[in-house]
Length: 457
Image (cartoon, rainbow, N blue to C red):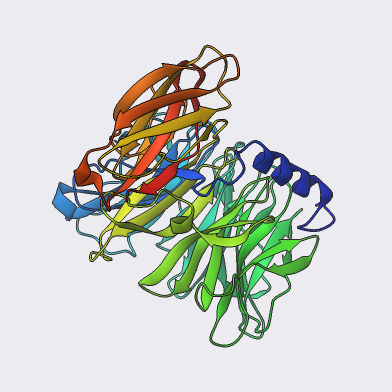
């Protein structure tokens, strides 16, 4: 932990450069992609690696059971196996595509009949327990070190580390209980442990020792994620009634909770740029996914994605964020809060500026102007009634993506020597009082404009 504070100079520089690469005035910084389900109504995400592969859970057999899955960078799911039971879920993934979680080993069995597992090279490996019946893996690093929770016996248990085929108990603060939730490539582990007074506390395991982390107001906390810089995020009781998302840096605790977003929050993921994700609001159904950045504080993902998503989704949880800023999240359709759907929330990088239609009235000709294009570039002008996400053919998502759902091509134009391209079309009278979304694309450069949202007079 060599950084001076969460507002370190290096972190501030990273965020400043990231912001400077965007067109000034950009309101919607992300595209949203619904991830395919295996065979059922619901799915959830839990982790994402640097390539953009996502792990989580998807319903199968029409929702009768659920299985661990990995979504590849194209958004296609691969169902992972079980130990013979009906259920499994994936909770961690590393850069080699190895995933961990838990799986049941008896058809129709109870949750007591689950084991921590590692999925590797198409096989499932039972990681065992610390002596009890139940275990579950939470995270894996690039060295294939796995951490999680295991029973010692029926009435007790705690955090473990598994490596080289052996599961070992992690030291505690005094009593059994707690779990390890994350591990970085330096072998630093974070989670919870119960002290002699019976309080479950956020802890860091390092060099074979356990260290209690400071708390906000009440001595109840949990450390849920750690990045490669040793920065930790999780949650801490601010009052007896309210939990806040927090970060621990250099042994100090920082309250990340945003005002006006709800009474509670929890942080579940952090990347090396200091972007933090989690949930904020009122449990169980009144929560929303958030992104915290040094420059903007805590903001809901709903406020950062395109408006007018086709099915009126609410993004309710963000579990992980990679170094490219891609966020593994899930949410629900309006009116159906109990059916959760997995999403990738993908950052975009607009490098061109698009004007609103002028004069902005239906029933007459309107002109849209693009500036900042490469001279001679072929510019494609697009529109849609709905926001969302669309892959640009030939472009990796980590390069760019469109923020329109099923867009229609208005037309094309060649940028002049000043990098300006314009297009003029007659807007039909039926568009009056309609809100339309516009974006421009230079496909062979994977270059996009910012999203323009316009209501025609």
